[in-house]
Length: 66
Image (tube, rainbow, N blue to C red; front, side, top):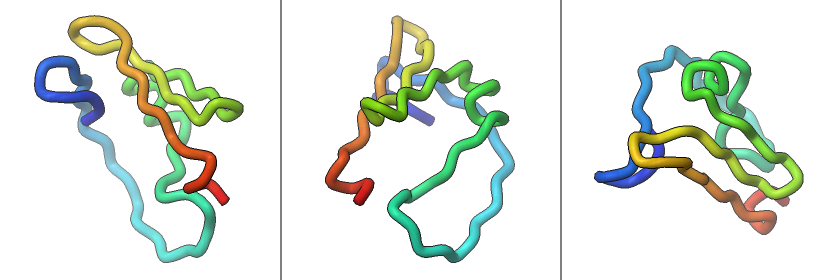
């Protein structure tokens, strides 16, 4: 689920949990993007998707990525 209590998008996904060391907390692939109809921007660390009341933007941090 992404968003807040009023403005959110919720879907059920199957995923695998693995132990790895890397700069990311999660790696989201095509099944995620297709189900949420999300558009990633790797240059700005943003993820945009449609919600019930408009566009939801999830923003990352360059400090967390390195």
